[in-house]
Image (cartoon, rainbow, N blue to C red):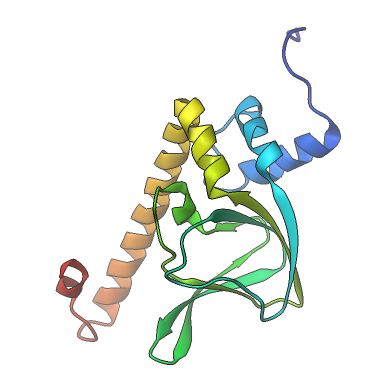
Length: 171
């Protein structure tokens, strides 16, 4: 039986919730929790070779990819080396979930066009402050994301032993 007091959502909102729940940082959230992000979401179109942000920039937003592809690159001397390609249904800029973070990579559009949903850092922090359960769920997802990245990093290091010293990470 439906609760007559529960909030109902229109088709566009339900589609947005389905899209968001397919992204690891939002997968634990219920519809009423996801709805908190709706007023903060901005749709933005980008074109090939447009930079979304540079490494070392302040982490000012989380980006959800509605369409297109984005390369996440690191600067090595005068070159950019792609560390990952992200595509539709994925997110990047995850360190915007943290306070006072700087970007660790540059995000570059590599498809002809890309449509991104931008959620500003300040809006995320306001949601976190007023909804500790949302923050806890999203931080758990972020911790799992970073743990998975660490596992891949260490596996890659083992497979290419000798190119760099892991001890440099802590110096």
